[in-house]
Image (cartoon, rainbow, N blue to C red; front, side, top):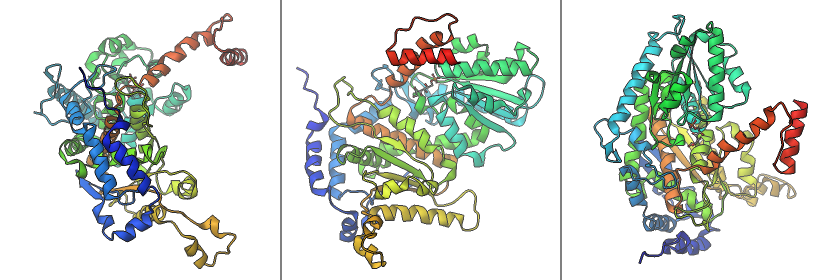
Length: 544
Ligand code: G6Q
C-alpha cells in the first residue's frame, strides 16, 4: 500500500508554525531589536560572496528553526539533489531542469538520459565565443563588407527578459562602439523604433526562440528580414550575414532561411526563464565579451554550489525562500518588493517577475490536487532612490504588509562626488524607517499639533532583507540571479508545485491564433465568441 501523500498544511512543522505565528504576529521589530543587542549580527548569512542581513524580519530564532524543520520535512535536500542529478522534476513536461548544467565547469558530469551534457554545453559556449570575437573584432562583416555595429535580439519572455536585464546590468562592461537593442513586442512600434536610425548593412539580428514558433518572435523576425533585404538590395544571400538563430529547433531555423551553421543550440532541459546563461545570452556575450560572460557563469556556479552544499541555516537561497513563504502563507502578504539601489539593475525587477511568478504561479500540487495555501507572491519593484518618491508611501504608511528586498553594492562603478554615499545612506535609512517607524510620542515631541500627529506616525514593523555585495561585476550578477532562482526553487519545493512548467503562457500562445483570421478576413466572418468579444471584433473591423 502506498503511504498517503502528506499535505503541506498537515505537516508537524506547518502546524507548529501556525501556533508560533499566533505568538509572534504582533511582536514589533523595535522590541525584538531592544531585546537582543546582537540581532543585527546574528540574523545575517554570508555565502558565495553575498551578504544577506535578514534581521529586520518579523521572526525569532524559533521561527527560523521551525521554517528549517519545514524544509526538512518537505524533503528539500532530496529535491535539490534531484534537480542537480538531472531527474525529470518538471513532471508535466517530463523534463529535467538543468540550468545548473549551463554553468558547470568543463570536466563536470551531469547526465540526462544517460548522456553527459556538460561537453555539449561547453561546445556551444566555445562556438558563441568564436562568433562573438569575430563580430566584435570586425572579422565578421555584413553582406556589403561593412563592419557589424548594431546587434538586435529578437525574442520574447525568457528569450528577451534575461538578455535585456543582463545587457543593462553589465552596460559598464559592454563594447561601447556597438549598439544593442531588443525587440520583443508584436506591436510593430517595437521593431520600427529599434531600427529607425540603423543601417541594415551594419546590423545583425539574433533570432532567439527556444521553439522557433512563437508568434511574436516569428512576426518580428520576418519583418526584420524584409527590412534587411530591402536595405541590402534584395539579395537573399544577405540573410546568412545578418541573421543568426538561438534555438532548440534546427528544422524551423532552416525553414526560416538561417543556415544551421549560424545557429546556437540549447536543450529542452533549459526553461525559458532560466536560459539567460545558455546561448540565449549570445547578445550578452557580444556586448561584454567571452571573458566577462565566463565570469558571469562562474558567479552562477558559485551560488549553485553554495545552494547545494551549505547547511540550510547558512544557505542564502534557502533562508530567502523560507522568509518569502513565511510572509506569503502566515502573514498573508501578497507581494514582495524588490528594490535595487543600483541604476544598472533597473530591469532586474522585471526579470524577476517572470522568474518568480511564472515559476510559482501554480494552483495545484505535483499530484494535481488544489493547494489549500497561497503559492507564488507577486514580485514588483523599481530602483532606488526613484521609488522612494512614489510608491514607498504605501509601503511605509499603507494598510498592506509588503516585505522588501533591498539590494545594494559597496562600490559604485561610476564614482561621482558623494553620490554613492548618498545612495547608500538612503537604502540603509529606508530599511531602518520601515522597521522602526516613528511613534506618536516621537511625533508629538517634534512639536506636531495633535490633529496632525496621526498622519505623521509610522507604525514601523515593516520587514525587509538587505543584500549587500561588493561591486556589480558579471560574477556578482550571476550570483544574484542564481540566488533568486534557488529561492524560487525552495519555495516551489515546499509548496510541492511544478515550478518549471508554464501552461498559462502556453494558453496565450494559442488564443490569439483563432482571432487573427477573423480580423483579417475580407468577408464578414461568422463569430462564435461571447457577445463582448464578438462586438469588439466587429467594432475593430469597422473602424480599422
Ligand atoms: C519561459 C516561458 C516563456 C518563453 C517565451 C518565448 O519560461 O516559457 O516566457 O520563454 O514564450 O518562447 P520561445 O523561446 O520558444 O520563443
